[in-house]
Length: 115
Image (cartoon, rainbow, N blue to C red; front, side):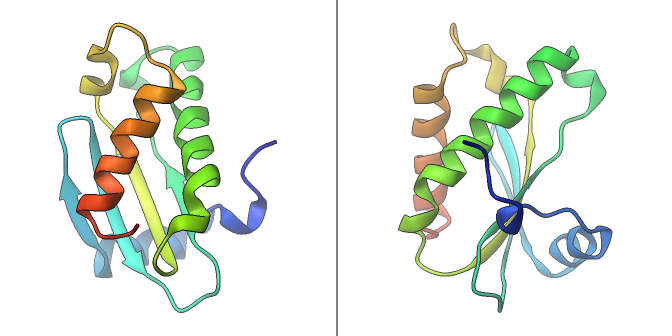
């Protein structure tokens, strides 16, 4: 089960608005743009550069991030557009798995007061 289409950011205008009006937060493993929207749904986009690694690794990171978002979207305190740019530091763990990404995102979401 993947992230529903209604929870994905895909339009260039949406990306532009988040970068222009949203808040930008830096973490060692991620850069996060967050913007409180006036829609009745929270949406997510993940951007990973080709320099990050091979396609298998990039897609694995995107899948893990989207899955954590999908599972915890019901815990959000409002409706947000979130743009995530993973950094290579996220790969420094011995094993990149769901539990590591979930722990990281719960920490980030609590710091951003999304949950």
